[in-house]
Image (cartoon, rainbow, N blue to C red; front, side, top):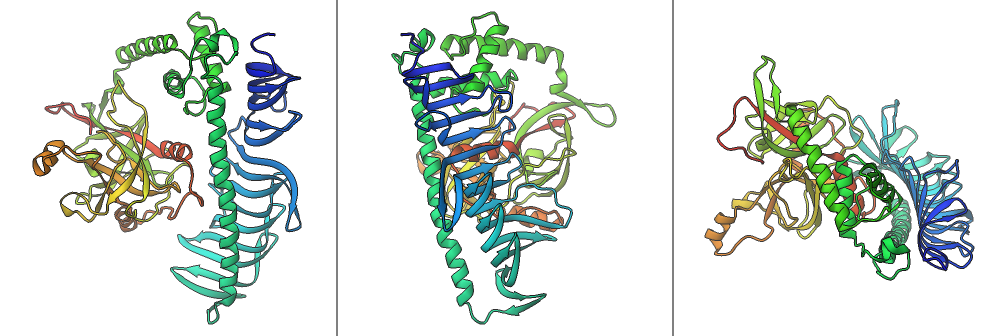
Length: 545
């Protein structure tokens, strides 16, 4: 029997025109793994997870469409509270829209949640999300809706019919609760019905949240299980794999270098999926190697060599990366870099010390405009001519012990230009020298992270990275070296600066439920940017913020 035959562990096995990586059963039946579809209608779509007993369709896992929409959950048919479903889980769109819960034919049908994302809306009403009982994709029954009108947030509790609230509606606004009857607001005298509605929604939301959390956890285990298939030296999947132990660190390093060479491989996640394998093969063909699609130490060496040669050539031919010119034609030279993040379509937040004394600020080829600053609290607001649909919601100041995540572009130079994401906790609600506008956190950061976002587990900003403890200062004061003592600016100060300058922003949490670290890293990276500072003359020392 061939080493790439079922039953067993196989790689790129052709099963009815589709490519399969993972464990298969007798009769070429896929059991657990990744399949890349080859039919014209679904070409390039992939599924990762468990298959049904006959191997013809999905049981539990993640289905990725080529357009970056995806399902994550369990495919099963049933009825709950009289409503049919064929899938339980999540469906995401690239614009941030998502549906969560019991679904049928692609629509919510049962209890669930709809996040509207960045939908175009000409009515002036910005819908954020619906929670409650759905029928054929619309709220029908007890429901909860959050939306904005002219920057004011409203929360509806009540009964909905075909997506519209009917009858008496309980409205929460500015920390007050009112009863909307027709077109008039009344004070709430009896909270019993309001408590019944909110209690029902809280209970069902908690049940759904528990299911979705378990799905996220189970899917993470599936990914590790599939990777382990190809980490075992005697897995029996051809000599190219059996003679090379592949771990996630090696895969991720390979992905990083391929991405820097502009290969399209999707997410850098340490996972040897179809896109990564095809990118490796394409690189191997380009440099005249046999296209195995398998990461190795020798492949890393070749990638490093090609990348280094490309960068040297780029530096020789494109000095514009380090030099610019002002309106008078005077030469400007790159002096420093820091991090920033989008807080709306055209506006970014960063530290004031990142942009201080700069004659020109750049985000790639885009020239940035300094709109406002708060020197005392070290905050600056920048405007970009480029509009983006990906920006952070602003949450509240963090709490002691809260889990947070920091992102940015540390040590930004020709040697390291990658976005770096780290995890930590809030250690203190007071900064250095009893500074109450800052907090202390433990996520590792480096020079260049300044101005980057600090987000919570629901994907919203709680602060701005500002500094790390000075080692000599702390050592002199305490007698010991600092360990992960870093500081952030509280998010409420950013909100105040935005309000003072009449700039709009989205408040609250981007995700309704807590998300895993990979989802949060993807979000943080999508909104973060490296900010380059140019000056007229060389400063005494070239420095990176």
